[in-house]
Length: 47
Image (tube, rainbow, N blue to C red; front, side, top):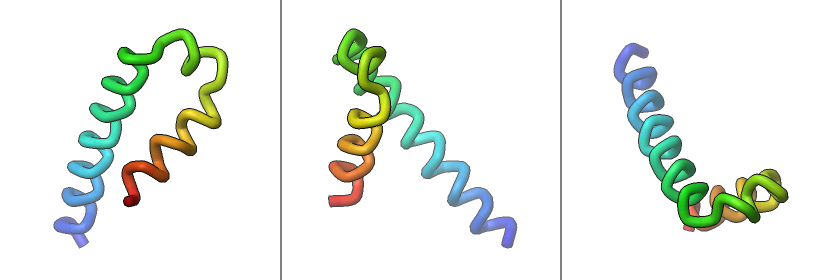
């Protein structure tokens, strides 16, 4: 159980890093359209 939580935390930290990097590359479109970009980022991450 604790391992699963630690693993989830690591994945969440990596995901947050990816999101911040993505937002830093495209600050204006992301601030205007956060939901579509979040969906696109999630789908690209799942591939």
